[in-house]
Length: 374
Image (cartoon, rainbow, N blue to C red; front, side):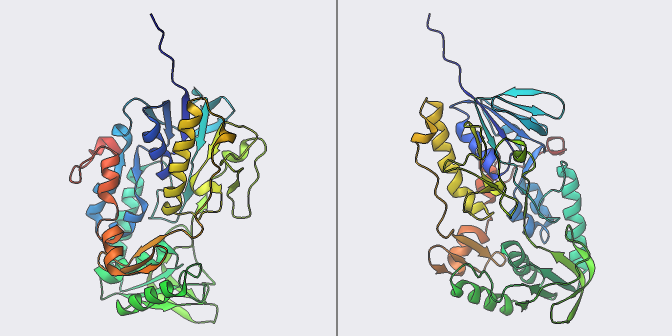
């Protein structure tokens, strides 16, 4: 009788946008283990709107228990990685033929969980939502995608509030054609948002969560607010990958890689997402390019091909970006600047919620139980 050939083992560390999709796509091709500290996936872009619509939390917190058919999702924290295994904090060891590190990034509350507990994130989101509902004035420091979308969401849902968006750059989204930033600024102002450009906040009381207070700008102006949102960008979580031999961090704190997204002396260990310094921004759009390449490459090497014989990864020359300002208006750059209708259809109306619920085996209306997410 012919003995079946055992599948190669892949261990993926991190269940964010990289980890869950790579695990799901390789589930039928390998013995997949996805290691994730949290019980459920959170969809961060929709967490912005959840501050205005708290009921959305039930739609964007997605348990991992229906993600894989053949593989396993292990709740735990990886503490060491070798060429052949991953060790968790409790001492459990998972052998691996290939390893993917996708530990992601941290962000100020309440846009991403700050710890392992989804329940704590849910509580933090609700508390900030309550603070926001009571606030008459809001200052948002940082005008990247999160800050700009937050300003638009607040102004659209609660138009009586005084909203100020502060950017250290002289234009919004300066890495893109000027038309995009100019149109977003104009639409924000139509919504009643005061957009302050070319100014830094000199005295943020904290950068990890919103607070009540005032902000002093570079030119000496003081902007008082019932609620200040520090929204100054993601921080890569690269401490684990730094333990691998031969790794080298960029000034941004992301890890440099070779042409095949390998960060170390280990030829079978890959990185992707926010920790990978491969020329992409720390965005979901970047992952939409990285994931297909990584999945295709791993399928080839699972079949016995050499990594070096695969096409190297190439980043976006200029990644598309979708910037809704609430459910109805916004602007995007899709190799040309586009406006409300396309932005609303592609992101603003549904925020990709049905897509990700389907990926996790949930219908649009089905809610996870409390026991699934605690």
